[in-house]
Length: 194
Ligand SMILES: Cc1cc2nc3c(=O)[nH]c(=O)nc-3n(C[C@H](O)[C@H](O)[C@H](O)COP(=O)(O)O)c2cc1C
Image (cartoon, rainbow, N blue to C red; front, side, top):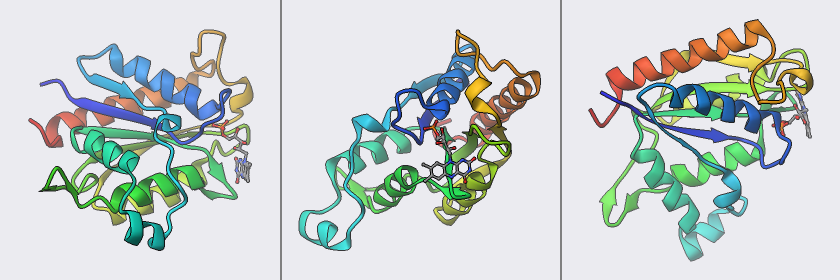
């Protein structure tokens, strides 16, 4: 059975290393029978979460749209930078808003509950953003996601990709391939739409 996988990079920057890593992971996934969608969070702008905003105006439509997209997947790959050893605000704010979606078209949904999630990061630094992934893992677990143990952090990312967007380092490439394989296998077996 083919799995539906959504890939979300946690950076808006045009030359983002994480966007490049997300694109490369999507390319690898597209070589399989998976149905892959690469999302750009620039297409889903959201205000900083504010309880007064939610009380007055409800959850923004972009959060509802993202929640619906996520709920329709078997697996999710989050590809995110780290800031100050933790989760970046774009990713956290997006997850926070989506976690506030309770119903879509009158039907209750819990977009992250039981969702198979893989994590990856890239950084120009030598840890590749792996400390941020620990924070992201904690958040996703809190929401009931099934976060796979395998993860991929690309260090020295400024020189980590060739002109075609492929990972130039063998260790990094093998790590991403292993993550993609595990995400796919787990999404096929535990995915919500089988
Ligand atoms: C506020 C801030 C904090 C940062 N903290 C870290 C850090 O803790 N570890 C790290 O490896 N890089 C850190 N960086 C550098 C980012 O990894 C770098 O800007 C990276 O290119 C961002 O990801 P992107 O290329 O996908 O946009 C930080 C950058 C900013 C702006």
